[in-house]
Image (cartoon, rainbow, N blue to C red; front, side, top):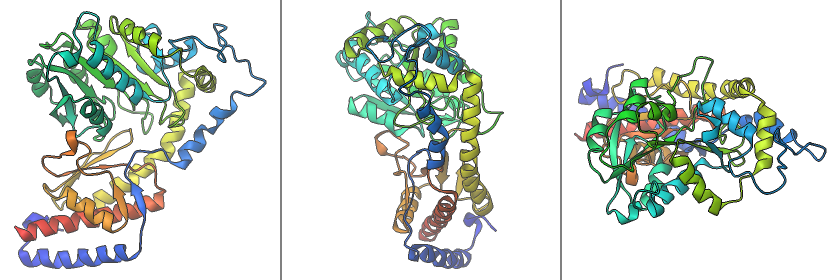
Length: 426
């Protein structure tokens, strides 16, 4: 089929009539489908259920260091869990602190610490420094933007490339001493699925910043979420900052939220000095320690990296077909029309879809009217404002394959209809 932009008005009207008829048919079905957020499916949850059976009333609740996990203490987390995350992230276990079930909470607390007490003992709290700013690669993760907006930190858009954030833009912006940091999802980035190249990681680690208290929030949420044995590789930012002479530059976060249970996983902070001691100084006042029973449960279930890999490949066998449904349909129905482009990630949880400029919100509205809920337009940009009104985040994991196929059909029809309306109104 011709590109829509190459069609005559008569051809556009004929196409609109056919697409509208298909849309009305979907609307008449009374659908109620949802692919708004990247939630694990019921099938994924079932894979992780054996984690719950590792411990029982007859279990030994002491770890390798003879720590009683039923009692207080052990702020840094069990050694087994720190070793577990050391294997996954590449960071030294002595630079790791195990948290509760939410890495988002750890990130919120760390930003709050910088805001209220400073990024280090030698620097002023951000709140006393004036209108501080943060760099936000876009499209990006809405919950990162939510943390910054809550604290009143100004957000600056940085365009994403196929290799990560545009480093020419980043290196120019960090010449401003009021730019205090940058959020990054470095592997299978939310929502593009991009993995930062070695060059980008090294430039982030080595760049000169005007602010001595500049911090990179390295949200490595999808560090092991490959679709097959040949997933993307990512340089370890913690080690790279040491090599570059900026050991304080980055603080890394991750969790097992989409590895085992989203509400009952374990999270982690990894940091060099002086960040490690500064974070720990706060935690001593904030908590007596995270859930060690859950830490022991996870470490005994996985045992080692091979156990983690085996588990993740079982999840990949469930997740990848969901992505295949969406991507195959996009290739078959939208490719060549000139009205949309999309990412094809090797892992993670999302597909980034860009439709014709000015048509994302209209597409969302049409989907909603036909019974399909998508992530709100603008969610992938600070303040919920997509300057081109073109990006839609697709989350394929939660619906069944049958529901996903139907939802994707409705989405594609809505895209076509929204773009046809725009072209005919020109």
